[in-house]
Length: 146
Length: 82
Image (cartoon, rainbow over all chains, first blue to last red; front, side, top):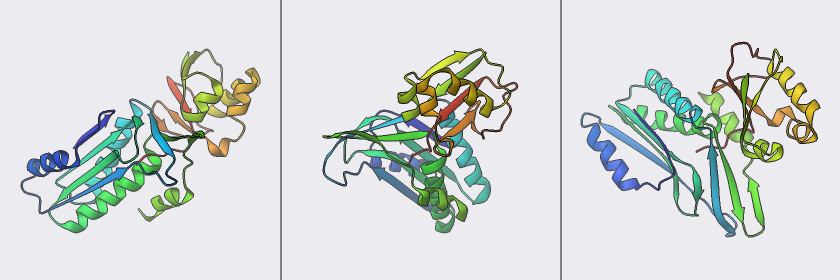
């Protein structure tokens, strides 16, 4: 298991290849990457704040839960904080398992939990000012399926 | 003594990221009442508890949880990770 909470940009290809190389016996690898979206075309930057200490613990606990729930070879979560520009990667999840069903399900589970249970807060900074991104009730509701 | 941390708009409304408090509050709700009575900026931050979350010693908790033995309390809005 690897959890990295970092300001530095990461390269999806490099991280995916390194993860794949670390799990030579896995039959399936799923990766997901979240990217800073500029819906209205007015976003100057996104600022992400987090709770150092709790963030790493919360993510590690999510991965532990995924490992007990599905047959996983390994899992990786990278999540950035600080100031990010539109189009930059925010975070990635990678899961490795003997079979794809477990890898897909665990990746979705981790994504749903990261959305509403990892202590990150996003602020969108635009030409007209800045606003905190509100949590969506649909994101909270997504947890009930697990 | 207890460390109280604020994140996102809670931090902005209160005007500081953390403070160390000497409190007799028995629960999170008592602590909120104590802070709210202190100054308007706290009252503003804690006006709507449905839009707030609390963590005790870095674990998500609830407003009725006891504070005995707790070293760190954090208040923040619902999380928006991912």
